[in-house]
Length: 208
Length: 208
Image 1 (cartoon, rainbow over the protein chains, first blue to last red):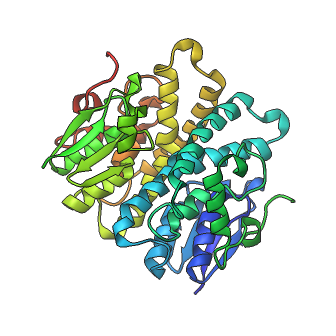
Image 2 (cartoon, chains in turn green, brown; image 1 turned 90 degrees about the vertical axis):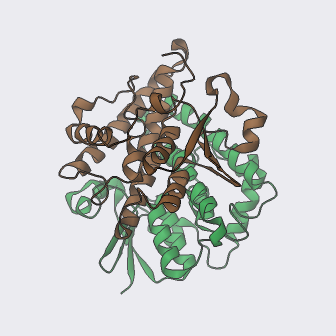
Image 3 (tube, rainbow over the protein chains, first blue to last red; image 1 turned 90 degrees about the horizontal axis):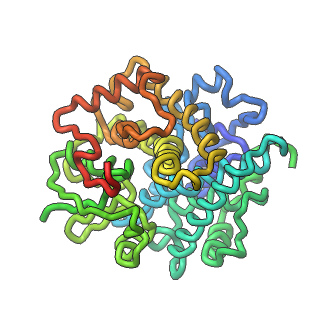
């Protein structure tokens, strides 16, 4: 049975799971969640994930949420994208860092700046988040100076996790030109055979 | 050789690592980092952790950062607090969720409301973060309804991770009385043999 990923195109967290599935070679298909019409907060969806969030992976009788958990499941199932055993803690470190400092803030900032009506955008909070994000970009950019991949010698789920929001074109204060090592690394990821942009992997919930 | 944890009392992230070490029975000792005097951003400390953050665990020739990584290392070393093998993804799910939705926001909100000079506190950002935190408390409170522990039948690193900031008395918008299932679970954790409050495990960087 093909694994089903509940997702929508605008979600960078869903993209982390979708791209991991796609590049691992594991069979999967997207199930569209109409997020901006409230489907993720519906009773039907909350029965699948009480956290009210995408992504959710359903593979037979296994149901998993949180992009990092789905990534680990795909690594366990396929043996791909987990890195060398010696790099286990380093991969986990950067997946956690992404969840703590990068995607958590990039995701909400992009949401506030693009998907809320203009008059509802909390400008001081946006400015605050952008300041914290600049510190996160600086940490990642410095780490990628002299490295091809975040952990070890190959692309891993740590790369996919940290890149989750950085391929989107909607403005949220991230400009690739400001961060040359991040820029080169994103190019490297996007040249990996099988790579796809989030909007080519998953249906968008809003018009382009 | 005894493992050394670079930490200070006010850091809930350091507390997650310290309490995991303490309850696992693994030998450890705290190394105080004078955070509010800028020591975590010093060159000497950044040579240990370029992320400029505590906690850092040094165990022989192993150096690890990110509380969730240190927790996983302690589980691997001691066989304690990892939960049953069948609950592996559920434990990881809640550690990631904590990093994404709970501690990341509780930590910064508590910092802004207590450790910044009053005139520098960004009130709109604090209000915004408190709104998001209320949604996180609601998710955790609902999950703990009818459960003793977050994942499986015993206390795991997922409980310690999510509780990391919730034992502190400084105000940040979290009131135990508002969330009865969280309140009962925190009491359960604090009654575990060997449990200690963060300020009894690690030296404070600021006067009480």
